[in-house]
Length: 619
Image (tube, rainbow, N blue to C red):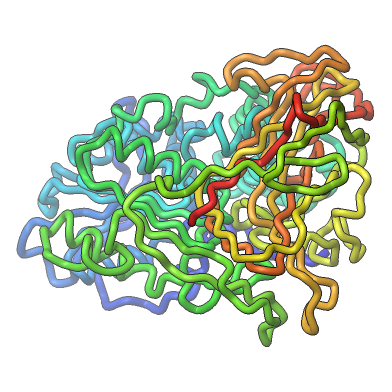
């Protein structure tokens, strides 16, 4: 299998700080106070490290805080850097993880624990009472949790690819479960957990993690049936998460969109990537917080995968050297210097903070093959002042019965396309918005063609060849078309089943060339809807077989130029595995089924039911 292999400890650091922390050379000597046990309001003590400038603290310092489930020792490079640049740096293991006491509960305690940690920091002799926060993924989520707790010491945050709005478009995606969190539990249940402190238990859970590919065909997970029972809080959370499709109080931790006015009013720098697993929530949070806060909210979106802002190639595609943010510590320090030390610097004046919105517009490359065999898709940065862009024209591209995609409305009296979704043979995931470390999938931009990199689609066969993938595409474009913004697909569809899924994928189709004689089908973004949640994300309702319903599929946001001669393509299917869990089509309670049945699904594309994708086209 052509998948990434990293030790579990290295995977944890990779998830937190990207590859940088693994390669960073030692910073100048600083004073480090290790393993301080800080008591929370309920008496649970959390393991905490403090980094201070060497030689003592002559004046009170602002503090950079990182609250981490992946081992606070992985923050050493950040701690040494900030302590050597006039800050205190605090790294804390979150509740129930590594050196901390208590029971882990995915982010549910991190608002209160963060507030208690902040109060402790403010009481220290070296603290000036200001706290900024740093970190990626889950560690971005601990920032959002503290901001929603309105912690008084919190001065500014930089949530990168951060956990938020978990029931909307992340852990549950329009009712479907994102399997990257199944993988997260498999990797972390024995790694830094309470259960993993026993060597024998740790060995069993490590074996389970290493054999997790062998567990994938045997879903759904049930209590007590796998070694995960040895880590009960992880088993309980995962089973609960896989069974809970509704966007309600179960997912309340880090739910910014539920009430953005709860968020602390302070400068916020949201960092995300078009191929990141949290991209849709990052842009949605920007739009919501810009309205809710009086303070400055900034957004930067690059062509990046999860946690990899210092890289310019992601998956099988190179976006050009300008795509990477140089020096991942320096730009963070610049932000903190502006808001915590009141320095008049580049924030609001120069890249990457020249304006409140900075986006990377993909697609200006020449499509050649780079020396390391990647597609040079290219792109460039552009400063904006809003998101989404008001000047973008929402343009429907309609699905037609002959497989074409065009701005012309269908005029047929009745037109439909049938296909069979067999849950025992789901459409494989070939790249996309997936977290780092999740080697059950490949991240980022890929040719939609099988190969050794994909454990469940290894033959060099394009996905478009499958009968359960329905392809709609334009002719070769007569001009460049820029698509920048939020993207939705509206489908009119019916099914022989009471429940099924519908997926959509936007593809930039390169024509054949000397270097790519078969062309290149580049995935731009995708999405899903579980039929029982078609009317509401809060309440499920099964279908009547054969009845036609409207479905909305929210894709991830993007900015891409479809160049002259390329085609715009939309692939419709009913599975995308293991990106999402597979719908068994039976209508049984979520993740509790014992049966799987094929479903005949029908797409309607006629004058009365004009299925389409709505593209934000920038003039």
